[in-house]
Length: 526
Picture (tube, rainbow, N blue to C red):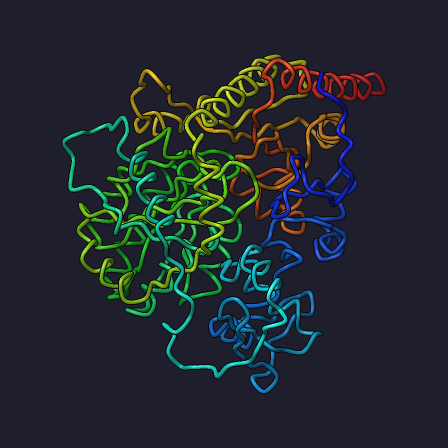
């Protein structure tokens, strides 16, 4: 058994860095409060994932933020309302770097903050730190209408990162003769993982308006971004073969009606139930109906899977396993030169892309990603060992463990396995660090969660193992909707860390034992 977790509620998960992106949320009581009203909990965090609560050094964002804030879509049941155009403005400042500030009434903060929390387009904590150090030199400068007057962060270290990413895309290829393959000029960096989806989405919308398809469950802000920005989103939330048939019927009807479908996006595998969609069939549909296919491989990760050849756009939250130390947020989008969509997409990216990954963030990612392969091996091994143990529990009818969601045991895992890279002398591919475990009822879920001696936090791919009550925290107010897509309040998402495997197994066995006692006690009372 590992040492008892002593991190206080709201503090960063150890090891603690100035730019940590984690927060320890505590036990089930916090889950309930967070699910009821996250806005009453997040302000109590001293540290948090930056899109949940901006780092203490961050103070700004820009034009797209204004458009978002004044939109009529900002009305919701929690009392939010659009900001009046007369009450919001952009002003430009310069300290160490040029940046734009959006000025608005304080009582509209909850409305405007959505632009940072959903698309993730804004400055990083390192940018803020560097400019705060030169606050004495702060001066206001004219706001120019030229969007390309924004800082364009590119440097030799960004090129080192591109070359490193290419080396992982090229190692142990499934189809060595397949080509052409991406070059460094096809890799684009963004300030967050969500921005690596939102920005390409916005480029395509500037070219033409059309419906966006999200296939399979995905991180909640992905769906929200497609609903908030653009003419509409069609959601096929199970990501199943049946959904593929429905998707084909939808695409055929849209074509018959002369309506544009802009793009299809999917996670491979999907968060939080690790469903792996049939991306070969998605590719075929994208070709048949002239639709861009965007794949998010964050959870599978470059070391484990090779899906670049099927994507028009491959997006990755670099924040997660690649960076690996929970102290930087960033994202990447990679264009596939073998794609029939490449000429159009390359033109759009080259026209609209502005390098926004701050140099100091790139420096940190370069340093952290040097041991990406060895860390991934450890993350794979720990997650697989935990999933295997919990699966053995699920096969026992007397156990409170109902099901494990992980590519190695999911029925959709056959699609994941098709894209696992060949093993090499230095690395054997695996199923990633993330899985979900489902208990049989709420009392056993609570007992398992409160007795699981790991940090309770969002995020994945960190050094520490993290548990998160994903459905309860995200969809407590809309559980019937979530249930349609297999999401249940009795599911706990786990991101395996780098700890000793046997110690982790012991921690999980203690949690299962606590849940078992809870179940047996309830049975005795019947």
